[in-house]
Image (cartoon, rainbow, N blue to C red; front, side, top):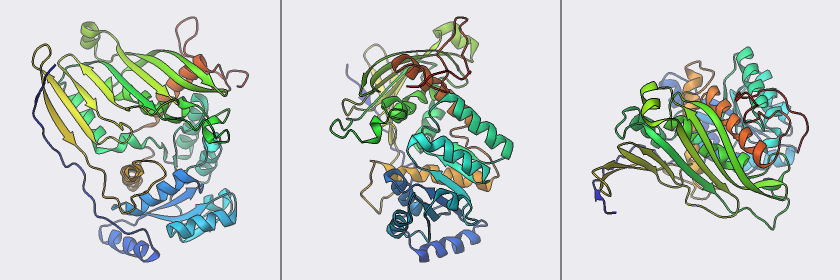
Length: 409
């Protein structure tokens, strides 16, 4: 079909380019932030791996009073090299040393996912605000335990679902809230990247945290919360293939009970379709189909920069409106993972939440994390089999189970 195009360009984010962080820049940040009425949020980086390196670089680009003051690794030499590379003033040769550092306000847990729960728990117990790289843990029950602990200790906790902090996602939610394209009938999304099949020691093949679902499945699983605000997960069905003991390709459908009764009567339950694979680099595009049009989140949708809204003008005809959200200016150019400059949006939002005394971020709340963990558990139970701490998709009465499951895989 042909489309009449009407493009509205929205320069939704601007930034000033900074040179890589230096000690003098840290001092300038403290000075300028004091003038604005607050001191910089001081980050401690727990891990010295690739994703932690990208996060440290993004901290150095933040315009809103963020600074990396310490890093910890499993060895002093590795921590020292990381600190030197990123101009971080303090390095620690163990994780407990970082957690006892009084010059750290918030800890970024960037270890492999197998250790997220352990070190997030230790960080919370140390009284540190804590941001955990996704997935927060390997199961719903572990995630719930962390949140219960954070609530008990009154400590900030967030799963690093950075995508939700992007300006494009805020715009997407606003478009859905206005019902300009009517209620969303279904949402579809894909995420695939070609796994290194010739590298058996790569983290993607780890028996517990490996596989496509725990690696990138949450990016699509969280889309249902946007498409069906206030909806409740009713069912998860999934099928897939397994390679080297981990889930390799997955197709899943998540059904939501709508909160709005009139919408439920007119269009039925909401449906989210997920396609994940480690066999190919996919387009990574998301589509939200409404009764009066559709919204397309162009790829890579986990680093969202363009939204297209197609308003129905009859069968086979529509009017397109485009919103562009450029990434922040990038002083580095090279990252371990494409688009990591976008971490700055999450870093800024965490800083704002901490200055306001909050224990969670509005863009991705504790309840959001729990629902995504519920979906991930449902998929993995069906594709790989049950493991400790997982939540089964449904029991015989159609209710979600939240009990510990025996056995491991």
